[in-house]
Amino acid sequence: MAAAVAERSPLRIGAGYSFRRAYAAQTYANRARIDVLEIVADHFFDNSKACRRELDLLAEHFILLPHGLDLSLGSADGLDEAYLARFAEVVRRARAPWWSEHVAFTRAGGIAIGHLAPLPFTREALEVLERNLDRARRVIGDLPCALENIAAPVVLGGAEMEEPAFLRALVERTGCSLLLDVENLHANALNFGFDVDCYLDALPAGAVVQLHVAGGEWNGATYVDSHARAVHADVWRLVERVCNRFAPKAIVVERDEALPPFDEVLAEIERARVILMQAAVCR
Amino acid sequence: MPLAALQRALAQLYTRQDARDRFCADPAEFARDFALRPAEAAQLASIGETRLHAYVDSLDRKRANEAARLLPLVAQALGPRFRAEFFRYARRVPLGRGPRRYRDDARRFARHLRGL
Ligand SMILES: [Fe+2]
Image (cartoon, rainbow over all chains, first blue to last red; front, top):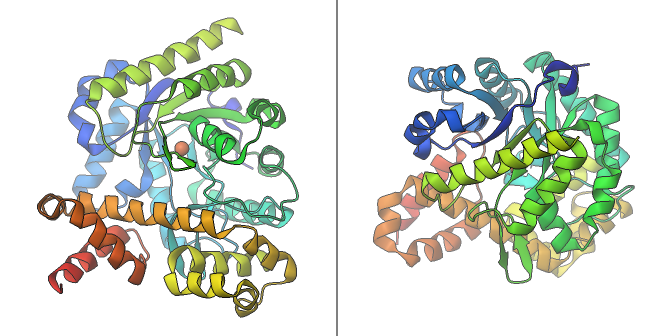
């Protein structure tokens, strides 16, 4: 079993953002203000020389956290080996302290859904995740991984446990760590009306190594994690609570749509760093 | 493998208009098509049409965003019609597979526009 992140990278890394090529020049220019870059592995699957050089250059200047979107660890059909091989190659080149994916499935019966779809919180789903993660680790190698909670667009009935208990069981069975997406948690709590503190109480405290923060918006009666807005004040408050509880090692700001001037992203990174470091001092 | 069958049914629902039509008309019949056991059939029915359609809209929006990113000049030229036309196209043509699927999607959409 791969070592948990806590044993492998004891240092707190800091704050950064999910790298966008549109910001490449500003990213290098401001590298003193960016402790870590998450890279979406799928954006580096192009096996051209230019793409490999881009990744190598990023790895020379930043701590990189490769993040997969389509490994589909929750697929009962098993993993797509071609995707896994590509993903593993990006992780290897990134020389990362850990890699991350989602507690979700994106493929079934030969169909690509195109986005993260929720799993039922059942023992069978846990077994599938364990089996697929085991296979992924055989190819990626002995590097810690962190699995992320998704924003649930729908909730499947028939759950045998709540999400935090499911995540706890996943950590216990596989030794993985958790990437807690605070915006997704916020969105799920608003859309499905559960208590965030109860959720946090039930999570395995030592397992949370990384946070995502992002902005969302209301679309009718549904709160959507659009990643197209500034981080909401309520989410920042939640980040503070989460940091005080779990002392994560890194916070990554996600901004995918309606990219603002880079100064706004830098300001969010700065704010995340302050929260992370203050929580560290308080502990 | 009940989960595999459930996921296959879900993937159809999330990506195929004809599957959604069949599901909304008769959820029990739809569940039988995928050989779901009663437990999984109940899980499927528990989603609810409202949330299902909201999810499908968000998937289509994501596809439209990717297409607009890949075809920026077309998006600029068409303005709001770009999205309206894309959603019409997306109802009929599901997203493909593989790492190039958004590029393929944009290409297919461009062909669709040419055919108008
Ligand atoms: Fe996230």
